[in-house]
Image (cartoon, rainbow, N blue to C red; front, side, top):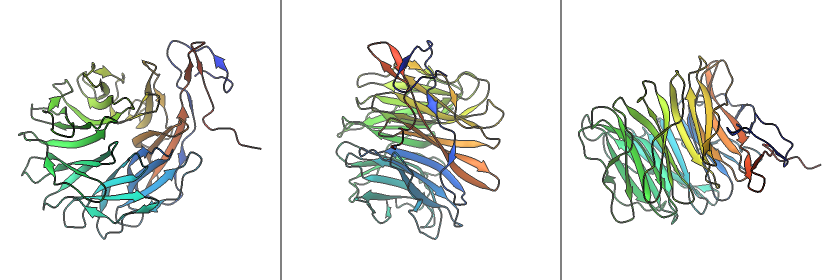
Length: 390
C-alpha cells in the first residue's frame, strides 16, 4: 500500500494502490440476528441502510442512516406478527427513501413497500396479492421519482417467474409479468438510469443451466430477453448499478472457469462490453455487490473463501484499471453478505454480516481510493476521515 501525507502527491506502482481503509467496527451494541443488509446513497449526502433482524423474536425490518460523520440509531420499520425479510432500499432525486421486502403477515410471502418522505415513514403498503410466495424483491427510483420494483413469483406451479410493478410512492400501476419461459426465473434486480431507462436482470434455467438475462423498459415498451452471461456451467447472483452517464455496470457469479468467480460487464447507451473476470483464486467467491460513485468509479465487494474462512474482499475499476483486491474483514468467524455504497465525501462504505458467538452482527468499514492528479499523473491519497476541528 502506498502511504502519503494527506493532499501531497507521491509515485505509485503500475497497479493502483488499495487506498486507505479503516478497521471493521460494529454498527450497533444491540444483541442481534442481523441478515441481508442493503444500502443506497441519496442526493442529500446520506447513506441509508436496511436489514432484517430477529432480535425481538420474529424477523423484522430495521433501518439506520450514515450522515457522513456518525450512524443514527437503529429504527424498526415493521411491527407485524409474522416474519418480514429481505429488505432492499433505493432513493430518488428528492432524497426520499423507498424500501421493499417480503412479508408473511398474510399467510404467504407477499411484497410490501414503504417510503420515508420529509423524515416520516408511510404506512406499510402491500404490493402483491396472490396466494403463492413472492420473494427476492428489488427496488429502484428513476429521475422522475417513479418507483420500480421486481420480484420472483411462485404463482406458476413449479416455475418461478419475474414480475414488475411501478408506482409514485402512493399510487401503483397493475403488475406485469416479465418472463415467459419453461426455466425457473429467479432473484431479479432493477436499476434506473438518468435517461429514464429501467434495467432488469435475473437468472434462469431456460437453457439447462442458470444464466443471467437482461431486459429494459424505455417508458413505452419492454425489450426482448437478452442473455448477458456466457457459461455452460452456471451464472447467477447478479447485481448492478447505473452511473451518472447512464452506463450500466453488472456483476455476477460464474463457474465458466471451473470455480465460482466474480465477473463484470458494462452496458453503454449503445452496446454491451466484453465480459471481464474479476477474481482469480482457487477458492469460491460469493455474494458480489456493486456501486458506482460520482466520478464513475465502480466498486465491487464479495465474500471469499481463500483464507480458509469466509472474508469480505473489495476491488474497484478506477481510471480504467482494476485495483488490487483488498481484504476488508479479519476475524476468525465467517463474514458474509457485504453491501457497498459511497457517501457525499467520496468514502466507500461497506457493511457486512459477521457471525459472533451466538448472534449475527453487522460490521462496517470505510475507505477511500486515491484520486489521479491529471497535471502530475500521480495519485493523491487523502485521509479516510477529515481532521477534527480544534
